[in-house]
Length: 450
Figure (cartoon, helix red, strand yellow):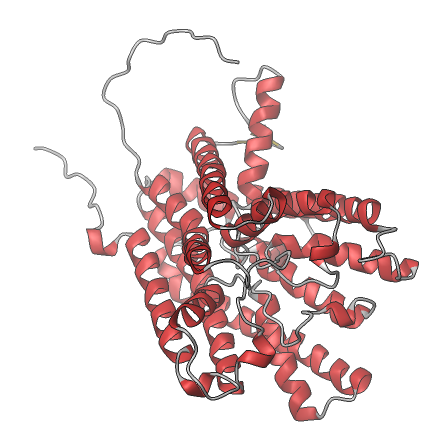
């Protein structure tokens, strides 16, 4: 009797199709709402491309804008943007959880049990409970951040309680979901020396960008790091290293820059450097004038944005785990080891190929988009590259050229934000689900590399 082949999900049920369709519909609804006269402060409908760009930026939790958010949009428009950010952030976390279930269901029972013991991943039986935890955790974090910001706006800046609560909720949603939208023309530059605002927003960005599997693993075993999963160890360790390195790099590059840190005292310089190192994870906020930064700081930000945050979180980029796995692969190759070992665990060959594929495809997409943008705009390579990586990594930081980019550039950046948001997740799920077993092996032939 011929054994039954495992069922393959239908075309309409493939995670890539589900994700692309869901985000596309959210962008469409957001565009229609933002194009109405009620969404603008002047009572006139926005240009359809402005509405489309803003809706895409909000759903993809990016933060790039072509109009000034607090002056162009009405309260209704700002509420729509906040709701789109919430939908986009929760959508990524819940869809990533669903994909974990689908992937775990496509492997053998023994492999599933081993993987669950090591990664603490979910199975279909407790899917509803996990999704409830994801939503509840997100809302609790946003409520806590909103409470701190609201009190600070009332006590420190004399805002009326209603206005302070509105500002607190909006920026809490924007921060936890790594969106970077702010309701001031200078983003958060006016709070550059305020640790209550800066540290609260930074913590929200980091927690939201770690990803659901890492956060729940930390909550479960916060007293025993030895029991952390491989995903948690790589994500937390490398994130801390990148933030520390970024802080030092920004301090060195901007310490005497009169357009950024120069006028600040030492404590404010340290705070602003830390904030600048955290935001490229995908946060998108800024307390320093990015357009006045030195080119070396732009390059550091480019690298940090491209790497991004944790898997199954609200951050963008190729993901810090992908970057970490590539580093361990290089290290193993330099040492002449046949296997990639991280701590006391071996990295599967399939995961290695997936990490390389996502990294190289990300580099290719950034290169092609940068070339296209250079033909569209008259800006220099450093500013264009910054803008392209910010869009691809769904970061939202800008040197100030987004609004002055031609309409063709706005369309390209919108597509880049959409692909950058759903691309790594859909590509990762497609690679994980598309496992083929060869019934024969071809002969090897040694070749020269390098």
